Length: 117
Image 1 (cartoon, rainbow, N blue to C red):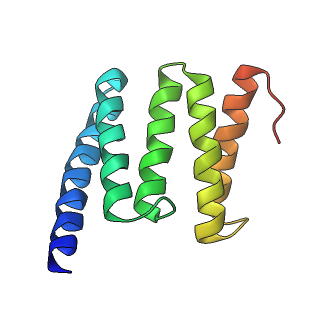
Image 2 (image 1 turned 45 degrees about the horizontal axis):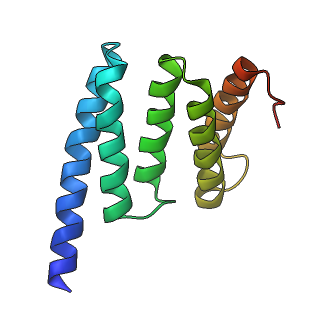
């Protein structure tokens, strides 16, 4: 319906704004400030799109990078794992978007002394 479309569009616009601001904060090394903005972006994209949509997966990946920058290896690894699974489903195994997050997951697991696979 028109109401559902308008609600999804509003969620997308709010998610875009939060996500773009989060990227700016993270680029400046202000990861503690970026984190809640990334979370807001992820939630907005989940509402506007779906769990395995490219926008949602990209926001999750950047949230994981933000968490890793704060040395929150376990939280980052969990998000990397979920993002890798979603990207595999969206893009297919072996795609550059998948291998990118799989490398980050391996690095985060190494920080936790967990097996790579």
